[in-house]
Length: 316
Figure 1 (cartoon, one colour):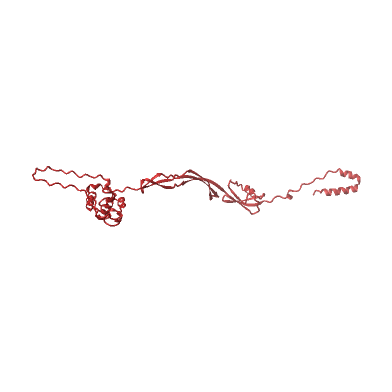
Figure 2 (figure 1 turned 30 degrees about the vertical axis):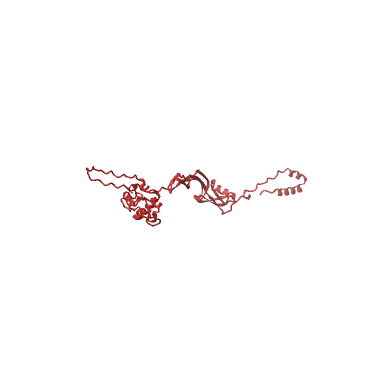
């Protein structure tokens, strides 16, 4: 074993004492002692530890001396993506038996088109018959584009987030006109052109010496005033003979006729006319009322407008 500098110094001092001053000069010319390096086994080195790294559906055990998460991931040869998550954090210190979890995270964006429903409004129009409707402005649906971000963690959707909304096309509201004009009260007869009576063929009579009686002059029916107009459910049979003649022309006296053409009964009322003069006092439809009831309603209309509504008024 090499002698330490301290032992060499002691030995040198003893030699000086024995040999005297002369030997002291010789001792000063001796070469300087060499210092031996400390053995590597005696130098303290960091102790390696083993940790478990979980990622991509599996686990990998690694041994590291720099006990940090970042070192463990490097030892496991794992590269992190932009959104990947690590637990514990990269700068955390590790101890024996610790484990690290790496979650793979992806974020994707998708543009979704959303239909914007249009609203409907109504406006009154005096040029249209009451109850009639007409679309003035046709409704058009709008369009909106939504950008949605979807976050996926280890292949499972974690959630979505609305990134932005852009209205590409505004909706156009639909506007419908509703008529307010009161319908004119008419019967089917007023829409027909009176059919003239067929011309009669006559033969020239033989001369006769017997004088002919004078032909009776045609008479025009006069309004009857002996009975006041009926109201409510009371019957008014004024002009009954006249109405029978008109009914013969209108419907061949079939008081219960309903052919499906919108006109009903012996005097061929349409439904608005029937209702306007209180026909519903007797029945919902003219053909459902009796002859007497239809005559009563006809008298109500006659008191207002005379024979004008009937095309067969010539038969009166």
